[in-house]
Every structure is written in C-alpha cells, then in structure tokens.
Figure (cartoon, rainbow, N blue to C red):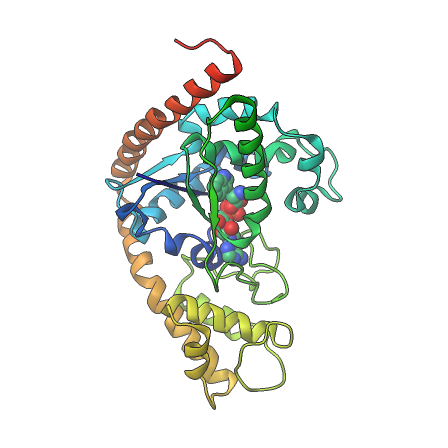
Length: 328
Ligand code: TYM
C-alpha cells in the first residue's frame, strides 16, 4: 500500500489557507493509502512562541484533524516529537544536505532577513521536513504551493542518498490542489494568507465565529470595477474570494463565476461568507465537542504514535545499516 504523509506546524491558529490548500483534501486518502498526518511540533521550535502556546496549539490541531473527519482508527495522527526517529533521521540527513542548497530556500530567506541571531534550526528546517517525509517511505505529500521548494529538496536528498547506498528511500511526489494551492490574504491579496500575519483582518481562521468571518470578508480588499470575474493580475482580491468560494463549494472557477453574474460586491461577499460559514460550521461544532474530551485525544496520540514509531523504526534500521552505524 502506498503512503501519504503531511503535517502542520503548531505556530498559531490555523487559517482557511491551511484548510483549503492542504487539510480539506486529506480526509479521503485513507481509502487508498496508508495515511499519516503529523503535528510537526519540533518544526515549531524554530519560531519564537511560548511553551504554553505551543502545547495549546498542538492539542488544538490534533483535535481539529479529527474534527475535520480524519478518523484516528484509519489515519495515523500523532505529534512529531513523540517519534524520536524524526530527529535521528534529520541528523543523519543533515550530513547529506548542502549549505548551498539550504541557503537558497526562499522560506529561510524570508524568515531570517533582518533578524539577529538566526537559529540553526531555522536553517536546517527543510532537512527535518525531508526526514518527516522519507521516514515513512512516503509516495505523496499533499501540501500548499509554498512547500514546493522544500519538496524538491526532499527529493534531491533522497535521490542523493539512494545513489550512494541503493534503494533506501521512496522518492515522494508533491500534490497540490489545482485551484486552492495558494490562498491569499484578505487585506494583501498579493501575498499568501498566513497563520502569523500581523494584520488582524488578513487571515480567516478555521475556528473564527460566523460574526468574525463576516466582518473579515466584508472588509476584504476588492477593486473599483464592480463586476465579479477571475483575473489574478487585474483583480487579485476578487479572484481570491472567488477561489475561496470555489474551494469550499467544490466548484470550478467557471461554475463559481457563473454564480455571481450581475451581482455587486456586497452580494458577492455575502454569498462567499455564507458558503464559507456553512462549510466550516460542522467542523467547528465537532471541534467544540472533541476538545472537551482530553482523555480521548491523549489516547489517540499514544496509540497512533506507537503505530508511527513502528514504521519509522524500519526506515531508521535501513538507513543506519546503509551508512555503517550499529543496528541491533
Ligand atoms: P504550515 O504549517 O505552514 O502549513 C500547513 C499546510 O498549509 C499549507 N498552506 C497554504 N495553502 C494554501 N494557501 C495558503 N495561504 C497556505 N498557507 C499554508 C501549507 O502549504 C501546508 O501544506 N513546512 C510545513 C510543515 C511540514 C510538512 C512536513 C508538511 C513539516 N514537515 C512534511 C508536509 C510534509 C509548514 O510549515 O506548513
């Protein structure tokens, strides 16, 4: 059986960018794949957030995974830090990754520019990500577009390693949704919607109340033309709202555009809002129910991290044997 793997960093609350770009599509994979979804808490150590926040976000994201419809009996849902092989493989692969290729990572450049004392973890971040993926002999990685460069690096490292030692790693493929791979900010529709945007109305969070979602969409930047159609260059704000609408209703952009023939921006935004709220509210309700059952979530985490560890150990064994480290 083929494997699908993906993850989310617990650096903040999750946005509809995370949802539409990645998570919404995760739910059905278990039917055809061994499905593994991690909360990559070790990655979040590269960002400055408090221990309490990290703990809270991690717990909420696992709960959200289940609320979204990921059945923990059919999907392996776990914290990255509970499976120590991630760190072990990351160290080994650090020794097969080049400073030059890591220096070219645009996310590293964006996050480190203008910062004093950039931590080494931020630089090595893509190697830990490669380890997450390669540890499970992953075939496909469903992510948003911003992860493209990291996926290419993962493939390069895996191919390099295999060329040296034989067929150790499966070479993974990136899978991005056609339309929603890059949801933009509501206030800055030229830039991606981000968990950690400074601008309070730029991102819609998955757990935002209907009132807050309405307020944010109402304030979303559009243009002065007054007609609704898709043209990312000319109409970035309107095109982004159309993309969000198409994403939650599972329509094509043509079908979505048709729904707004003759509509003004007020009506357009109202309908986008309603569709978004309708899609998110069952997830929110399920989340509210699940988050109260801490014991259940903890049990899911323990059981699933054991399943993940068992797979991870097999790869680590192969890797250690390949490079000449002791195995027993
Ligand atoms: P993270 O936590 O930033 O984002 C989680 C997922 O959401 C996608 N995403 C978006 N998609 C569309 N539009 C947006 N505005 C948007 N913002 C975020 C991301 O592409 C991602 O799929 N490095 C990863 C986490 C990670 C990982 C992995 C992912 C670590 N190891 C192994 C896959 C496999 C990250 O920071 O994602």
